[in-house]
Image (tube, rainbow, N blue to C red; front, top):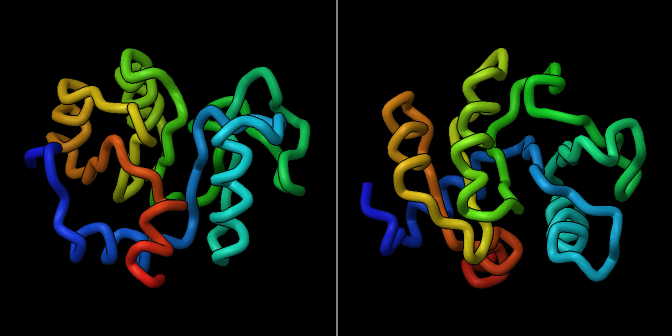
Length: 142
């Protein structure tokens, strides 16, 4: 898949079929984008599991933080990534350690790593990069 452009139909399908999201790089700091995006996703009815090893066991927006993706014991539809592009390789490794692979990995604004995306796509995971679901939801009227 090319990651230079995504059809609105693909983005819409992902956002309407997703129910559970693991948010990698979740922060308890209100000034951080991950904090605000998590609030928006919860407001729109998604189940959001925050992932941050430094915050494990604490709560963000009333949701208990886990240290790593492999700590999640329920199926996850999407991994929403708030990490530097170079960290996408380790995120994909963590995705591969999950009991059930998610359908989607979503790299936030500025998060693009084509090699990591290709690895995930080889295993059947659809990858979206350099987009924000909190922007796409209202843009698409969802």
